Amino acid sequence: MHVRPVPAAGIAAPADAITGSAWVTSLAVPEGPSRTQVDRVQFAPGARTRWHRHPLGQVLVVTEGTGYVQRRGGPAQLVRPGDTVRVAAGEWHWHGATDTSPMTHLAIEEIPDDGAVTEIGDPVAGGEPAAVPEAPVTRTLVLAQHLPAPRVVDHVEIRRITIAPGHGSGLHVHNGPVFGSVETGSAVYQIEGEPESLLRPGDVFYEPEAVRIARFDAQEDGVTFIAHFPVGPDETPRIDPLDS
Image 1: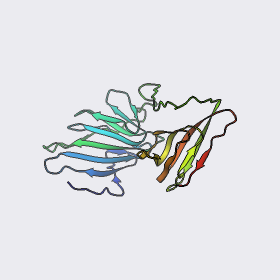
Image 2: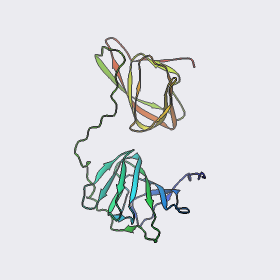
Image 3: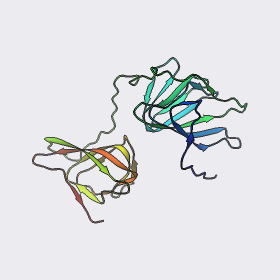
Image 4: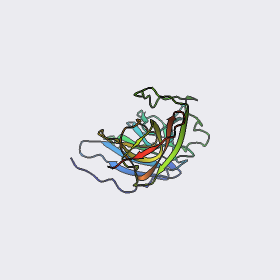
């Protein structure tokens, strides 16, 4: 076993394989009997690969942003962080960012022993990406939280909150439940006495009423999230700092 530090920055993707700007960081290369190659590919908004196909196929794992993938003869499909795409061997396809959002994915593939390489085809025509996902409307349940006790709620306050890089809210409690969803950046979140977790864009969280929140600490990229406060009659959402 050995640990290989990841380079601080990727290299520009080959112009004959990408339309627009993209950067590739090599994470793993074939070594010994292993034929596995892993790259991190970062697409600027509007950047995409040309049509291409891999001799043994490919797996893509989206880690940031929003993008499209499409196989020849099928619709373009929207992909988001956490989505995994398996491309069949020899299947013509393309992938890249939407026009308004960057996209980063891991690209994992087996390199053939016979030296066969990826075949690059034509650029993707401007009208080919679908403007919407394959399904016009999708609904995904991301949080279903039971409250420990009945609560009278007559309105809900929704706030957008930003915490600067390296800062946090400190040990605190809320006078009511809080439901949140991270928009940008990342933060370490921890209820006192429980394991901490790293929240990224798209992640949701729940801060129970009157429970000690040990950490909500923005990382080096800061964090912005939407917080929903169910509020009772004549009540104002409040955060109460505590001594650590």
